[in-house]
Amino acid sequence: MTIPQERHVLVVFPHPDDEAFGVSGTISTHIKRGTPVTYACLTLGEMGRNLGNPPFATRESLPEIRKKELQASADAMGLTDLRMMGLRDKTVEFEDDEKMVGMMTDLINELNPSLIITFYPNLSVHPDHEATARAVVRAVRRMEDRPKLHCVAFANNTLEVLGAPDVLHDVSAVRDQKMGAMKAHISQTVWMLEEMENKLAQGDQETENWLTKERFYNYRWDQDFEETF
Image (cartoon, rainbow, N blue to C red; front, side, top):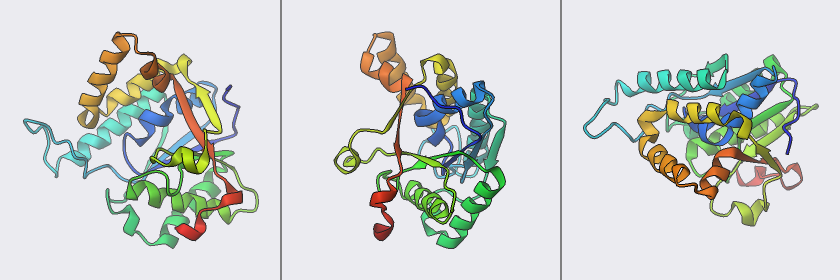
């Protein structure tokens, strides 16, 4: 599917590296076309599990490492509008709902995006992912003129609930930018990337398809998940 031209794209995820694996190809494509893209990353991933063996970081030093990695990922994609929103990793789910909705509403009102990319409520596994998704959906729901809302979903029951993805982007043309974005987050992803690169070197087509195809769901306003939030 050809990625359509947008007025402005707003990407909202809670953690550094959330952008890299699922949407960095789409982000890079929009940027190459000259479309403004803003990435609002809610935390610095300071509770990331990987401190190294032997340790390369402490819990105190990891936030600065991940901040630099996030900037490196943005640079790899060509992204110039990176917003670090200052919330704390693994506590987004405990933030006041209206505060979160207000934060999203302020971003949307400022940027006037034609497309927002985030997680799909109830289908994105991590509590911080879910809290982010809820806030974005609630903010958009209150708008009279809603932007498109493309959501990433990867819970085990996604196909059962939503079926096949609505949107499939071929990002082969920006494969190098996507690889650069993923490699930028090396403190958390080194083992996964080594495995992936080994499979690619062996010509594994499933891994190549995962790398070069990005999948999204249009938010289903006709089967709104609000009652289960």
